[in-house]
Picture 1 (cartoon, rainbow, N blue to C red):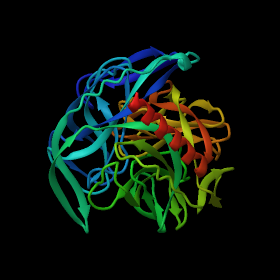
Picture 2 (picture 1 turned 135 degrees about the vertical axis):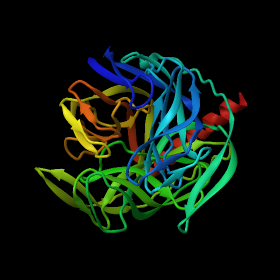
Picture 3 (picture 1 turned 90 degrees about the vertical axis):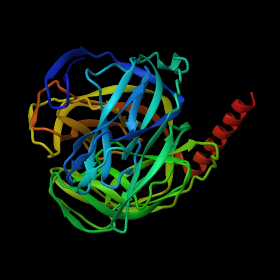
Picture 4 (picture 1 turned 180 degrees about the vertical axis):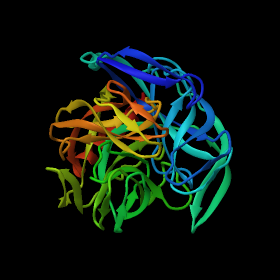
Amino acid sequence: MDVTLKYWVDVFGGKLDKLEIKLKPFGFRMAPVTQLKTLVADRDTVVEKGKPAIVKVQTITLPANTIVGPLNIMRHALGSVLDVVECGIPTRVEEDKCINNVVFLPIDNGEIKKGDIVGVLKVFFVKTGLVGKTLGLGSAKVEVIKEKVSGNLVWRDDGNIYREKVEVEDISYGKTHIATWEPVVSEEELKVHPGEVRRIRIREIRLPPNTVVVPIGFMMNAYGSLVDVIEVGKPSRAEKEKMITEAIFLAVEDGKIEKGDMLGVLCVYYIGLEDFKPLITGEKKEFAMVYRSGGGVIRKAMKMDPFGFRRSPVGRWEPIIADEKKKLEKNKPRKVAIKKIRLPRNTLIYPMGIMRNPYAVFIDAVLEKASRVEEEKTISQAVILPLLDGEVEKGDILGIVNIYEVEVSSIEKLKTWIGEWIEAQQRILYE
């Protein structure tokens, strides 16, 4: 497949260049370890609610054979990190890379101070190969380099912003690849308009200790995308229990959110830390699905029993390629037709971090029709958020998604899988 990769040669918004790339069907095997790297602002930056900004951060150097993604649950009082920007010319997964800027989505007006912790980056270690040969790949090489960084932990409580100087050491955790699904359901009624970034009260979600969350990767509400969720008060570490009470919602179309509407879905992944305990929980959920069908919007009452999945450590990459020419307006999200991606039954996607289009960040994939994970699916559009005025041309790369096979099952089965994972880790430690 031939695609065009455009990039800024010197600084973001500076000189534009492009590469013509011939993509091969590549896949990967993930190592059972993920490292967290702290993103610290390297200069003061004034931000405005709803207007994504490029924030310079202290440079992070990553080894070859790594892919990345932001750690969800907002880490700064003023907003959330959507993606990161590579230094200079984009590199391949198999090459060393560095990160020196992030795409920050503000939910309030204010100023990010030099030294503020704006987010956290997940670093995944992988071994690559042609699709069809990934099952035979050996283990990925893990180069965990722990560093301590100083920064300001910044949070809001009762309308006040607090800054606390902290020293943070990079941590690593074991991956169980086991997760539950958690619908994010609105607790209020409001109208939304394209480009608005809304902070919406949601039905409380209690996250057990030793979990990280990821939005499902598909646009699950007809009017927009779930970008992130908010823990009120001082941010908690992954090994602590968390209470989520608000969501960050990016409106793509005019519409009305009603109480009980599902805004999106979180994949709640269970991870292994030193004090890991199998605390998988779940209960029946009721909500309304809001989706497009036949040119109109349908609101359908749903009941969902608690369930989840086990993800394969083997996956493949699929580029998101524009299939139309479209003008872009700064800060206005757009749906763009893409070359269709057909997903087999029992597959999920996860956006691959590092911004791949010079004008816009990839937000969500749009399915041709509402489908369950267990069904075959087709992605026909992408939601992107432009940071600059510009234009997408047919054949331009908008982003990349990781595609994984999953095994869907009940909470009870997930508990069994977790138990087996713990036994395997204890066996490894003993040996």
